[in-house]
Length: 308
Ligand code: AMP
Ligand code: MG
Image (cartoon, rainbow, N blue to C red; front, top):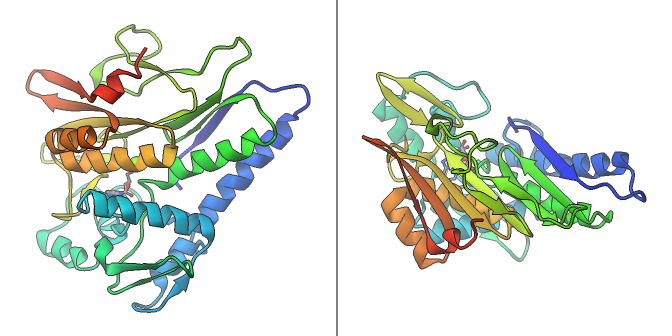
């Protein structure tokens, strides 16, 4: 799904590293086979190719992620939207290589008509979904976090006493290290912030003790054109790459899927509206904005309480 993963762990004598690897790769396989837009045979690709109006049965994990995504879409008035596949592809942030030019407005308008979570209907009892227009699902804003949670659930059963799972910059820590300490993590900073998290005591440090962290940023995937930056987060209201001055949003949450999806949602809402949403819902969130005189940082009380 266009990203990398890593796992850090304290390996007890009774557990072989090969079974750890096998566990991780099997669960990654589940997510890729169900939710990858990169794989033509995935359930997601199959749904995207299906005709408008036809009910499509979905596997349990896929349905759970889609269900959560739709609930968040409802809660954020559509800031988070799992049906933006056509727009994401149009802006060049899909499985194909990144483009270098923003698309013309008329093309964006046409793609907006083939997007929108209200054009997706879920049948929870029978675990199936159908679309009322030619929408295309894209779960890249939530699936990494889900995969982290899935891997954590299975590693715990091996059993492993402590581990740190990371996919594409989203992390979750469980248990403690052999020294009895939790996994301390320096939060991701936009590269241009000039903070080296390994070598700077101004970096924000947090203990990932049964806790996940996810960051959405305009420095992950983007292109620059005519002096403007276009990043991979799409504002579903306009169909355009967001330009709200946010460089990064970091969310802490017990579940990595929730953290991942919320970080994406808050990136769309922007510093002001996003902060209001996060405070209202007691989300632990940090916003880093680009200003005229450098970066500005703001965090919710819930976030501040979790820092070292
Ligand atoms: P993340 O790095 O978790 O914020 O995810 C970014 C990815 O999510 C993008 O590359 C798109 O594939 C997808 N995406 C973009 N905009 C949205 C949005 N408003 N809601 C949900 N997913 C989005
Ligand atoms: Mg996300």
